[in-house]
Length: 274
Image (cartoon, rainbow, N blue to C red; front, side, top):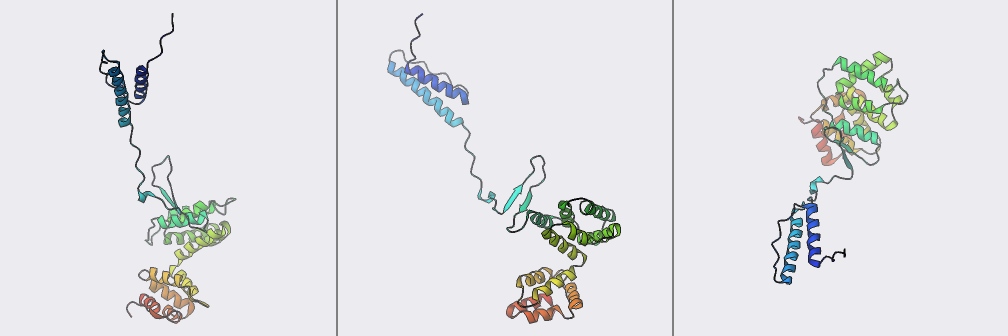
């Protein structure tokens, strides 16, 4: 048999358009019958069909996704990680330059935890926390610092003070000594600060205030931060601890170490009714 004749151009256009349309869209409606009298008309019919199919493809393709809103941009110093297999809320991890990942985790956990401020504590939970700290600290080779971060960030001041007492009764050593021996240097300092503030916040802040004014120069940032943040909380207790430990009033030391409107502002916070 002789080979079939080659496809004419109009057939080639029609086949190309049909294949492209079938790949993405339902088949187009049937083409109108070609004109029998004029070859030029038949060619125009098929070109129009190809154009119609191409237009169908264009209109049925999904639109490109919109650009993300500007408020969705995350700062370079902050990362949000979400577990792929859970529905828990995302965990915010603030990366502060110059600090280790462990310290960052402690700061974020402490700032984000909701702690009870009531003086009552659960004795059963206190004993369990003391045992967990011993098991993941002094008892094992290599400290599980995540346990320390979790307990120190989630428990109230009264609860941490009770853990310290329970730890001493159960294991002779104090929790402070365990923290000093079992944690890294930077984490050690942070945990001891939390523990000291939990045991006696008035005494802790009194020492911090005295240190900010002791010697040459004044640590104005620490002095202002403590007085402003504790003015309506426990400033009277801090003043009493300061007088007890150093034999002079906090107001007198602030008066002699500051000047001008800055002095007047701090003294107004220390003695609002004067």
